[in-house]
Length: 302
Picture: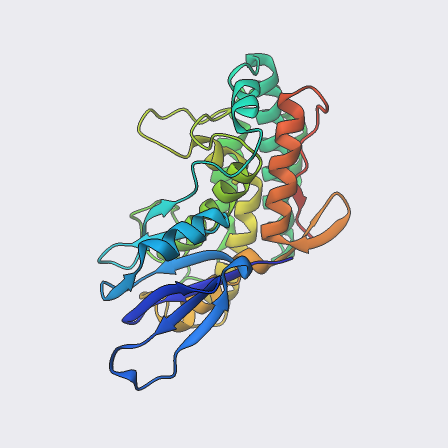
């Protein structure tokens, strides 16, 4: 079942009662609401005037919901996820920790190949020549020692928004000009969804197959989300093409970005919401770690 993504951008009091999240508003001007906790997948807390009870936080985590907090610029700044969400967790941690370097390089090869193929499919949809991208995807070797991921990224970002953002060359970067603010927000949601799926599969989001920054607690999530990034890029492209003012993350724009967990994606020939697809991807990753499979299940862009 697809889980719901809840966004709170105004003052609210959130508590648990009878396995429901109860939402109350200051002043009592708006009628309180209740939502079954088991239906919740992602909660975004985007107001300094939100009060949430400890009981509700525990119940959300027990239900493997990802809870995202934001900073004063309304950008995601933190992610809560459960310490225990899989009954075989210690066994699975051990399998993950003993994965060989050649296996991790092969998994990264598959990850980069799928990411470039998905980027190429999005570029093709806006009329860009993708022959170089497809060549780079075919050429990726184990571990991507030739950095085809980087070559493809340079070509991709140079062309994706060409003609849509005042004829300037777009530069992708966390602190660069808009629509990077939209991409940062969308990727943060995607990262939370992937981290949630990793934990549900009994894997440590910290230990990556490629990313290994000592200060990054989500290296594996950052690895696994790579082929999913073009789906976020597509949502942002549609916002840009609509001609909306995206210099600020307004409620209207956030609402468009919050559909990301529920987007339909095709994985292994079958369509499903993105949040379900990430669970299939992380389950396939564990199967690779324990030797049951050599292939990751990633979505294909169409």
